[in-house]
Image 1 (cartoon, one colour):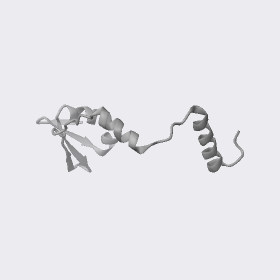
Image 2: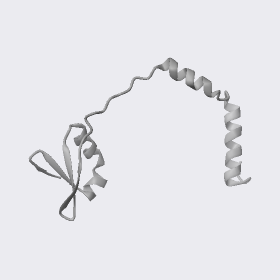
Image 3: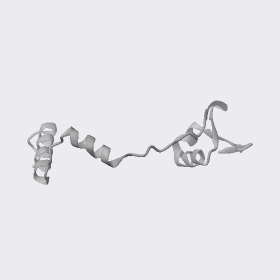
Image 4: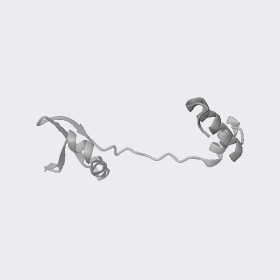
Length: 94
């Protein structure tokens, strides 16, 4: 990576191989310019407007209860899994 005036440059190869470093640089607030065939083809900028929305656990539980999912025990889960595998792979599995 080449650093010039606090703007970082990254090639497509480095983008694929060093994605973790790219994420860290964006978390720090750095602006990244994307280089392809010695030309700047794009700019990756961090999103500073990220907000975390608080979740009301009671409202979420009420919505889940309204969906009325069946309560499954481990035997029922195993039975459904075996049916799905037989349907997908045939009777040859045990």
